[in-house]
Image (tube, rainbow, N blue to C red; front, side, top):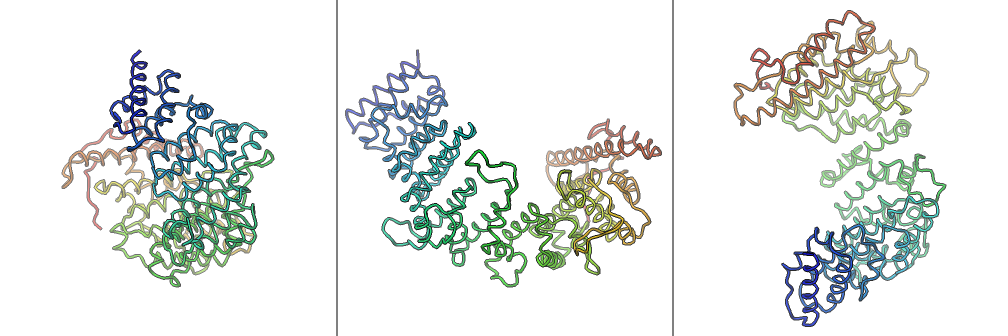
Length: 624
């Protein structure tokens, strides 16, 4: 009953403002129709209020925000469909709402249009309104209000990929109506090119150069979401040729011709980020027909970027920094490293086949890591971009070649560095995905790299444990524990006994590794490596030892110290649980380790802080 009274009161107020446009809005009254009221109001009252609001907007002489906000709340419920939007009387002027220089009105109109994504029929109705779609596209690209631009982006995406998209083959065909409207309508398709092209700066109705770069960034962003045949291929050749595209569509324009990256560093950054994200998705083609295979991996992105010179361009800032402008390099080196990392991760076999670029990458990593001083590692100034690339490479490339050392050996265990430990943990652990065609090779290389690294760093485990015990440096201690856990749970595979391939980027044999490590035989699994020297005399006692206390720690609040101690204790206990589980599997072939399994099991049962005492150790500080 209260809702009915409130609705009638609001209707009467809106009618009064309609009768006298100079009358002020009672904002408090309008706000009383909050989300809960709007959800529960009678549908007849909802419709009556929306009719009044629609009639009021064209005559309103004051800030429309309260009216727009009330409309948004009234249409917010899922049950309020686009079909209901079309029954508003007087009809909602969607075109006027999109072109109005008022963000509140823009947002309200976008809320109305967004309702159409719920059914393919409604998508078709919107697609039939060419002037509305044209205004929607222009609003998205040209508005200076970021909230409006973001909502317009979402509406366009929702209409291109409506909620009904998965209704089957017939639905897919009907769902193409908005695609055809945007990409086959000369006015709309042409407006995207003209608004985003720098060649039209200064022409009537065109944004400024600065505003065009904003539009360019918005276009690049949405292309990543709707990559498909209509984006990749020519749609209206006469328009595309006008903007430099001879063979291709909107993707070619945006990725190759649109951005003047030589004179716009920010857009150069955006462009490299676009290439990286575009390259990162192997399963990204949108199926606009029922025969498209969702699961088939495509190399279109890589082939496209390589064919048009963008692949080499994106790599060059990491591989050949000496040739680049230092100012540009400050911003582009990291993006280039990200691109290289994605290429290696998503297309490892393609990377391995490019011997010149593999060598250039390794040379660059060797040079970069050798330049990092001990003081820089100690002060937390890790070369994160270089470490990212190193961790992204197929592990086989990191194995030493003849007299050239592995870049991995230049990552120190001391001075302790969080990012260095994370990199080592990732590389030593191998890959869990046994379905990967490179899983065996990667995991065999992970094992070999672990032994090669520990031979070059004989105090490795002592340094790792020392860092893990230094709870005063919580993040570094946790990273050190991640190295221990990574080796315990490693997905290692054996090396071959002989090699057939003559590739320079090939695995070692088991005999080669034994010679390099000076050992007749090496443990086959991570847990076995932990259960042999030097790890067993250092790592296992540390894991079994009771958790540290926080007494006598100088500096910092007691609460912060307790939190750090507990977090490290939990991570240590989780690592011990990993050891216990792996020992259960390993013990079958090594019954002599039964006593160790029992000891570890007893400590696991005590919990993270169980058995802690002064004897267990106090929080220390690391001497760097």
